[in-house]
Image (cartoon, rainbow, N blue to C red; front, side, top):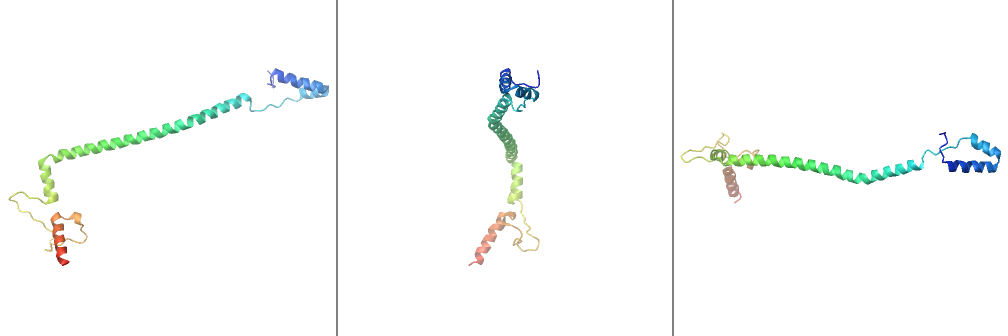
Length: 156
């Protein structure tokens, strides 16, 4: 096959046209190779099919990637929830133990057993008023109660 890849009908038509115009035109036709377009019909069709496939698959691929990300997020949330459930079950098991409940009551609520004497040392100076930098949540409940009573007496 030569450098000229036109169909036979196209070459014959061009040669016939050159012969009709005269022998000089026929020589020019044969001497000068026909310049061929780089984009053939098949290449254009292939490019169109590839572009159509890219456009057709772009949205489903984006949806797939988004759904995979959502699935990964839900798995992380599930693992976090499972860890929280495990922690709460452990806390529930501890709260069912009477020794642990008693320890928490003594520590946070300053409870004492019958017959015991409870002492609260405020700051060692003999003044029962709390320090200013200590918040209400950091003090025992009875200190907050007496502070409220004292404050209401001062406003009379």
